Length: 256
Image 1 (cartoon, rainbow, N blue to C red):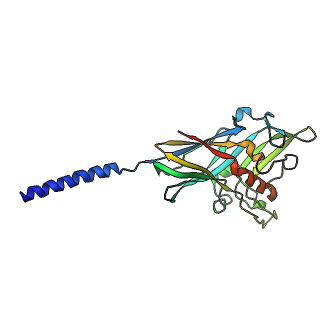
Image 2 (image 1 turned 90 degrees about the horizontal axis):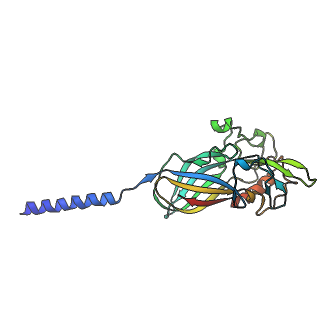
Image 3 (image 1 turned 135 degrees about the horizontal axis):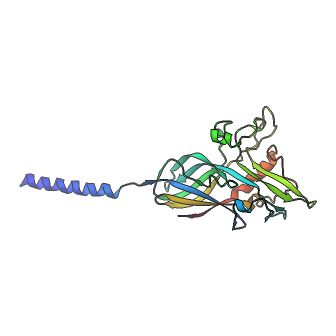
């Protein structure tokens, strides 16, 4: 009887052990970040470009002719504080309707995360001149006299200036540089991390991110296009103002 009793116990252990393993199965998935664009909560696309449709917080009537920007280093934070970095970057070109969704190569486990974030632009150690072939082809480079590397954003259009004339503007965000030339210096970092908040990730989740374009001109600095319209790349003070205004530009729209 003892051998039979022992076999029965072993059988039960194997059975419950297998059931426990199946309950603990961890599911992995890709996430996709989809980017949409708004002006004062009104959705916009390239079909509204090239017309003087928008009024900024300073009261200037303006158009958008080109909008493209770079995001990188999507990061998810677990409840225990550990982070998962999804290496890579994505160039979003609203004018040409490319890069509006981005799926990092690496998968993550499904479940709840206390934060999902990304970097607007590139962190300094990855912002290396000529390092990315596709960005070189896209003419995304920054001149070496300003430190090289790559743009963070190009927002271009026209506005009605204080003389009631149409004038071009180039709202280009890069790494802030002083002393343009062979040895530029960098007063402060102007890339920034966008924290979108807590999410629950299921299978093949879409994380929908909204850019509120009007906020680039609004808070905390009310942007006067008559003062800051062109030649902003070598103007470190203007770059720092852009950095400050960019902190509230992106929000998490929804997840589906």
